[in-house]
Image (cartoon, rainbow over all chains, first blue to last red):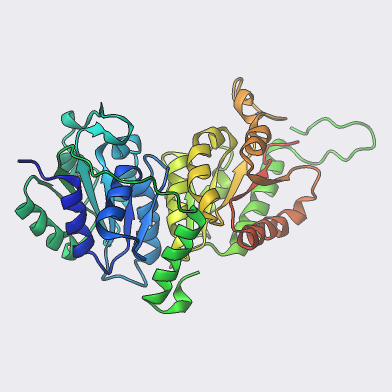
Length: 200
Length: 189
């Protein structure tokens, strides 16, 4: 039986409660809000399709000197990853040790009606390794996910975890927060959890 | 080869001289910002500038210089860097403006992030590419339509002012919490 997205999000929230977590748009962000509520360490990308990993890559590069022991965690979807696939080469080249990417792969653009993606024909683990990522793995069960969360927290990045999930969705409301507030909330969380002088 | 000039107008700059002097002004301007990250796209016009940061005197401890495969990816990476408190500068060519508009208008613009870019002009005087003007000539119109603030450095601004104006534009991006682009004409015009 497939793991559902909401269950994965609960595990990721619990596993990275004190780390920066960058959330992809659409159902991923809304379901995280439904299962975990607003969290200071969660940066929500509201509409930049295909750019979630790139946004997190910049964050990881900017934080790797001041927060070297902490992962910047990305929760991305298969469709959004494919829209910005070139970042796989950039991240593999730059190799930030503090970047961990979870790709929740349901094989469809669920938020827009379930149109199929090309993910079924992509070996994402092989792509990541071929692009120079330090490691990558597939996850199909809750047990494997729990193990992957622990592994991702400690393994040198960049690492990619492809989590195969089902297409069940939680009923959620639209999330209509002002993005300027989202950015400032996140920066405040960063400032509150490390020396103030190191965050602009 | 000197550029022809009307009588009474000084004609001292060859295309190569012009490119070199304006490129150095851009280098001086970006260096005055002291960026810790320089993100660049491939551009023959920018070769002197990019060589400085990739393998020249601009290489330094604590500075990371790397290529963006696409402008929109660079916008997203620079947005993350800004959130982390870094000082990123993007350097690219104006024919990539169309690529980055969606990322720009869904990340730094609405999230109020002070992203800064130096954008070299193509398609004008001195251009050797027969088609690039079709997109480059629309740069200002595209940015205006998107509500993105830009400043222009070309023959109307003495080249010895360029570095100062680039730094002022960077400061303006910090003051106004939004993306700011400086359009620099390295080829002429």
